[in-house]
Structures are given as structure tokens and as C-alpha cells.
Image 1 (cartoon, one colour):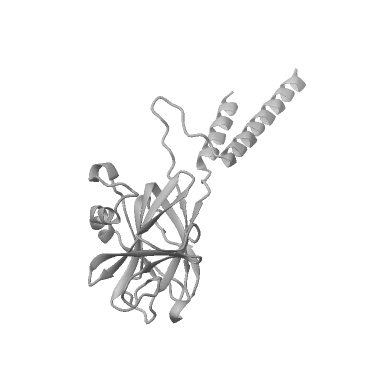
Image 2 (cartoon, one colour):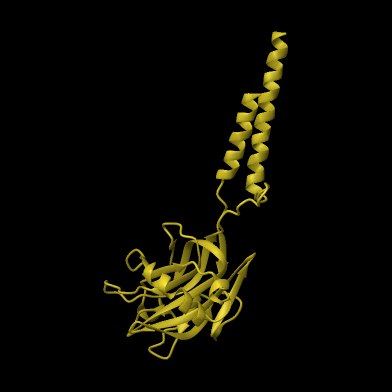
Length: 250
């Protein structure tokens, strides 16, 4: 009996340890041209994205452009229709999700106007929408004002490999989970190459759902069910072998 309980516990632990596969959300379809912002939805996850440009440390709203290669920022100062740090401004996009996500990778496309570098600055904030009187799909300015202090203190770099051109890479090495993210052309770039890219897509994970009070838990994903079935099969086989061994001794 103790062996049976141990096998059950091992199977449950194996199922709990299985990682969820990362979800993908793409930004290169659903319309073209410039708008104040766009909302993208994949399953239960929605994200509102707005475009911004940083001039002398002050953020100003810009248009968000969408093309077949992804999202860019459009403004009236040396506009390349990309997220870039060319000239006196630094472009960035602000992403406010309806739920906290753990970003995994981002796909950067580049190559316009002789720019091929995709060094980026990334930041994040955990924003209580209700407490701050904001909505994830509301005013980008309201989100930026409410999350500004966190975004400033949480800024970090995501470098491409040399002038590597198009790049899909991990942008969250410490596996932070947040509902507001910022992706900019590299702020304070120290190399000799200007950074310019369009954001084509992201992959992300959702944090595990805590079990409700009083027991129960989230519904396992298909891969988890498969492992549970396999585990139960192993338990059944062990019990049958044990029964046969008892009969042989009788």
C-alpha cells in the first residue's frame, strides 16, 4: 500500500512539474497604417499597445504603425516607421495586458534605411488597474503615468549579437511576471550602430492558477493528462505484478 501511495505522489509531482507551452501573439496582421494604438487578443489574453517617443527624457505620444513585418512608431521627426533611436529621439511601445504574463521571446525585424542592429531596452511594471483607476485597454498616457516609476526603476537591456539583423531572442532572462511591459530601442546605446526594428511578435507564459479555497485546482493541460494517464498505467502495472507475485507464493 505504501508503494501505491508513493507512486501516486510521484505521478502527481511529475504532472505538477510539467511546464506549460509558451503562447504566441503576432503583431503583423489585422490591419495596416498608423493609429493611436491597437489591441491584440490571443485566447484569454489581450494586450493594448501604444507608440511613444522619448525626447530629452520626456515621453510624447506617437502613432503606432502596423505592417507585415510588425509594429513600428511613427512621428514627425526623422520618421523611419520603426522603433529606433536615430536622431534626437528614442521610440518605444507600451504594452498593457489584461493579465500578468511572463514574457519569453520577442521577434525583431530590421534592415530599413541601412539599420540592422536590434539592441533594445525592456522594462516592466505590476499595475493594479482598479486601484489606479486605469484600464488595460484605456489611455496609454494613463498607463504610462501610473506605471512610470516602476518602468524607470526596472529598465534593463536586451542586446542582439552584433549587427545580427532579424532576431528572435529571450527578452526576460529572470522570468519576471507583469501586466505592463515596455520595449524600446536601446536607451543610452554605447555602440556605434543605431538600433531600428519592428516588433513582429511575442511568446509568453501565464502564471499557474492557484487552487480555489477548499480544494480543487486548475484543469490540467492535454500534456498533463497524458502524463497522468501514463503514470496511472505504471501504477496499474506495478499492482498487477505485485498480485502475480503473491499468487506465485501461495
